Image (cartoon, rainbow, N blue to C red; front, side):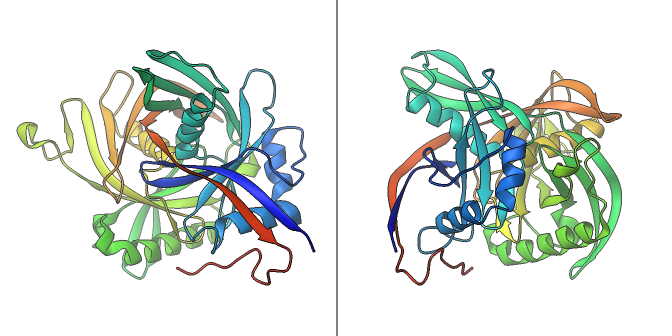
Length: 349
């Protein structure tokens, strides 16, 4: 039996954790980042490491992180495999924001004291760019241009324990089921945390069982990743409207329940991209404005902007820009004792 140490650097983006592993102690082979993810899904070593860093006593039910891997080519600074307690995801906006901040903090990508620099990252769903904004030698914001995002299906009805949900499926790097929380008698606030998780799970499982969440060009990206339960915040008091649009901004609050009941504390980066796709299809946001003020269940915010339009698999799509900020919370050297009977750990919610 041997003792292993695993070094990580931890960040949070708008309250959501992101644990970065630069020197991954297990093989993650593949011809591309997308291929590495597929192989990691069936790798006992990769799954053991993921569970060890996610599970108690080193993590918790809502932990999130990434293994750094080589990029697909010299056009990117790094590649990453995103992970959570239930597996490896195809995209992660809050993780992309954290990686942009980390790349500048560590000097991997030189940055000016004042101005902006691009950090190019290969993720399983494609290539994304994190633009790190600096003032007075400090990082003050990070935005990223996400992969093209689009609506897959509308008007799907799903029976839940709180009534029938009307669901829109949209892709923002992963496929999300989007539902108005108020239509199910729920509010997006910490007091409703348990109920939001429950109905989010019900909707995800029902749609996955029906096989409706099919990516138009890449079957590896199919399946419902999470449920976005959202509500209108309405317009600022001075400009009040009943549509939630004022002063060039749509204002909404959401909670994303992903994987098996995991809750995103941030407004969810790829989920924000999926919401932009829906709002653009509704004519509420678009190139040149309005933008999306997207609030999380803990009150943190992202800003979502449509910066372009395109077509993917015959579907109209938007090019989304999501802006937020990440902060370093710690550096860790985790020890895994080969004699420890609780490795890789356990999860209690």
